[in-house]
Length: 343
Image 1 (cartoon, one colour):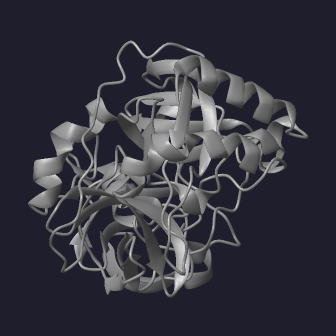
Image 2: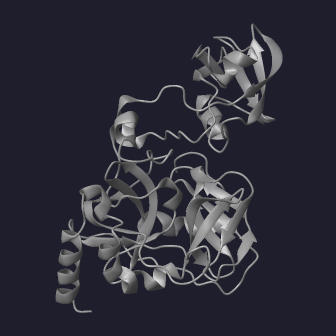
Image 3: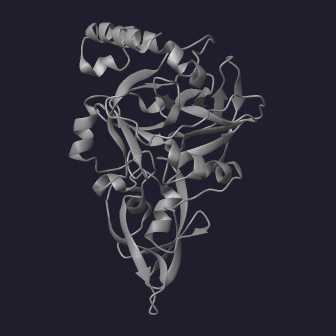
C-alpha cells in the first residue's frame, strides 16, 4: 500500500470512529495496519499468570528469551505462542528502573525482534502496537494505533519516581536509620497507617526494619526494592529493632492505601498500569491500552520496532520504553542479572 493510499485509508477509518477514546482500537482503523504489524506480531506472545492474561511479551532471543513488563507478573507463569501452544515460564531477571523482566521458556526457533532507534521520530507519526495471536490460533491485526504525542524524553518531577501500585505495601513511611558513626543500619518507621500490614502485625513508629524474608535492609531504598516484586496478600517475615532489642513479625502486605486524586481522575478513562512512573525515558503516544496488553512491541509505519509498550499512564497516554533503553540490558538480563536500583 502506498503512503498516500495508506493515509487515505486512515482518514476514512478515523471518520467512522465514534469517540476519541475508541479510535485507538476501532476495527476499521486497525485494518490498514495488518501488514505493518505482521512481522512484529510473529515476535509477540501472550504472558499468563494462573491461567489469566496478565501481559504481552516480546521475543528477544530465538532460544526462548522473552521480555515483558515485570510489575504485572504474578502467579504461575506461562507463555502462549503464535501457534497456540503454551509453555511454563520462569523469571530469569528483572530491571526495576525500566520495569522489564526476562522470561525463559524451553523453546527454540522463535523469531526475535530487531530494534530501531526512536531518535528523530517526529511528533504526529503513526504508531501501532503489535498483538499476540488469538487464543484459538490464527493471525492478528494491530492491537491499537495512535500517534507520537511527545518525542523520547527523560521523566521529571513525580513521574521520575518509581511508584508501583501493583506492589504489596506495609503501610509505612520509612526513613534511613543510622548508627552513631553515620552508617545506615535499617529502615526506621517514621509513621504508619493503622489499616496497613505493618500496624496490623504489631509494628510501631520508630521500629527499625533490618531484614525482610532473610535479606538485610540497610535503609529505606533497599526495603522498597525488596517489596517491589511482592504482591498484596503476600506474607513477609520481618526482623525489627525496637529499643535496641531484636524482634520478629509476620506482616500481610496490602494494596496502596492512599490513591491520589490524579489516579482517580485518570482511571475514569479505563484501568491504568499499576507501575507507570520512574522510567529512565519514554516515547509518548495517545494509544489506549489495557494494562494486561503492555509488554509488547510498538512499530512505525515501516514496521520498525521502536520499543515496548511499558505503561498505560493516563486516559489517552501510553508510554513506550524506547529501544535505546532496552538494547544495553539484553545480555545482562539473559545472563540472569537483576537490578534493583537506578544505574
